[in-house]
Length: 176
Length: 176
Image (cartoon, rainbow over all chains, first blue to last red; front, side, top):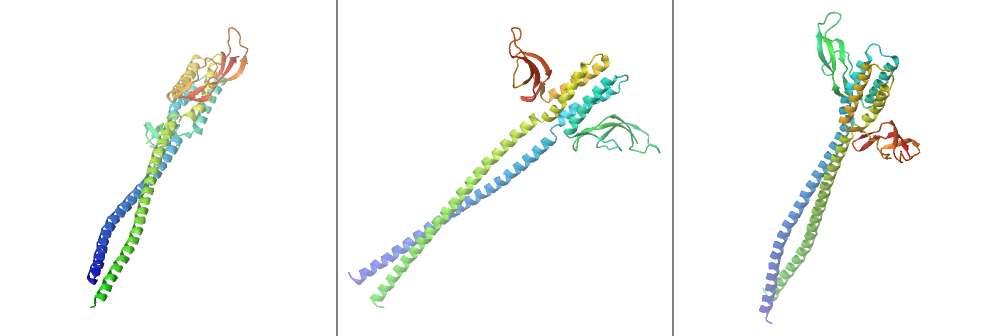
């Protein structure tokens, strides 16, 4: 073999190697964008996961708050509907000439109803000075020195609240 | 330059190219595992996201079911506590010598309580043949031809249920 041919072969090999190198570089570029894509996908799902996780905690928190509120005010509707019975019992006790037995019986029912409501968080609205959040003025009287404005003259019908929530206002006569 | 030196240079170049090739292959291997890692990370977060999403829907479904159940049985506690008042009103109506006015008054309270409970889903337990799911036998009488077993002889105290849920069983005397 002449030196020239040897030389040519060597050169050919070098050229081939260079070509392979380029091919690899191209492959590397393709691979890099594949890697980029994979990374993008990973980032995307990581973000989706983090959002879903946060949303899950929000849903759980809201569900807990709602449950607590439902529990706290669960007796609201029945309590509201029971109040007229309590009014009627009070009115019945004001009837003249009740026998002691009947009076005692009515009082017993009244007390047990009030107790049942109390255990569920229902209490009478305090009637002190007039408060438009708790009282409804069904009649007014002119205020004077003995009866300053906002003094309550009479309670027509008791008001009730369930915890902090008003079930019905007290119907009052107020000086103003 | 001698042919030998030229040749050596060419060979050197080829060797360098080969070395680069190996280095690239190594880099390629590293890159492949980087890609694999990225894909694994993407798969992992995809799974995490899908699980979180499914869990979120479960939490939402459970919260809805719980809300519905809380709504449906919300009056349970107050209703249970109101029942003794209803018993007392019934007993009061059985007292001899009530005036018509008093009787009417008591009946009015009784009806309004029953109505309030009914609107919240509370109803009397039917007392037909003895059913241990709804009735409690407080006394038994020997069954005979006129009174077959499981016939109810008397109701001591009415039972009540809230929708499908028993609030308290009816207290009965039963033949058996």
